[in-house]
Image (cartoon, rainbow over all chains, first blue to last red; front, side, top):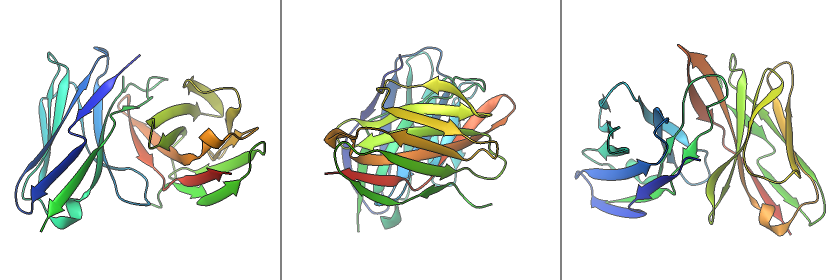
Length: 115
Length: 114
């Protein structure tokens, strides 16, 4: 089955600096890669996702890049703010509707923004 | 639209008991997946339901079961609870667009087994 590795497990950055979280996956058939943010006491919130037919996607201060050849994808947060402090999870799935939607998650990165 | 709702939010049970958790998906979403989140094992897939049928299943023992109703609401049941079942149980609903799915999570039910 799919295996997703996520690094680093903890990350502290100064407010205003950039943060980068990296994930690798093992299943070459995976084609959907979402990122979730989980705050204390809440469920994971989808913040951005990318599908295998694109290499990069941006949404304001957040971007995700995908390298299918190397089987890795990364989350980039620019101009970090205190409210970005949370645990971030990457995930992978085969994505296509019809029974392949199971998400395999990375182990999470605890991001702390230092004011 | 209202988000995914889960009830109850917190639950305390003792070993050997059984528990039923409920999930109401986002309106219009027909697929519901369940995940277990623990500090040691992280987020692990339990099962997924679509149109009242289990379509995908993770590697959990048969004590973990679920079902989905005609209105897409879903329940999961854990029988003969063990201490290791203490976890945050998350439900995610998803919709299909262009042959692809996106999953949205509820706040979870935190289960403590004593």
